[in-house]
Image (cartoon, rainbow, N blue to C red; front, top):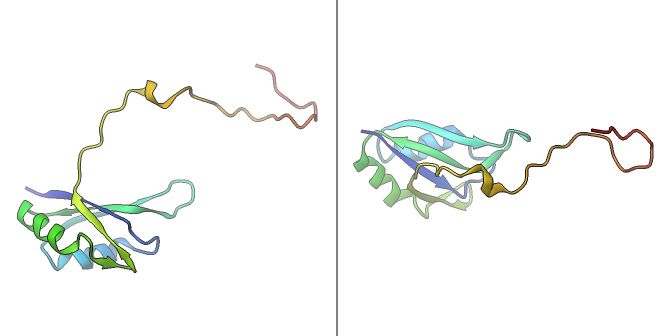
Amino acid sequence: MSTKLFVGNLSFNTTENDLQEAFAAHGTVVETNLMMDRMSGRSRGFAFVTMSTPEEAQKAIAAMNGATLGDRALTVNIARPKEERPRGDRGPRREFRGGGGGGGGHRERY
């Protein structure tokens, strides 16, 4: 059974190949998933690495948590499932409808 690890504090220059190579020294890497910002296309500074067994995952945590990759000290631990969040916790939803208060008289009315 594979185990997914959270890897944080990554340099924005770190690639999935860099992660694959670093973690492969501690077991079989099933998958690497570097999280990217949808808008900018840049790394968000964290990733998920899936190791093939819980034992290999523990070896990788012991070796890589606090280790340096790309001049950054990594944070590595077991990934927790994303918690369900009620939609009401985010505050009121705002929609941007264009127009503006520039006094140009082009404001749309709804």
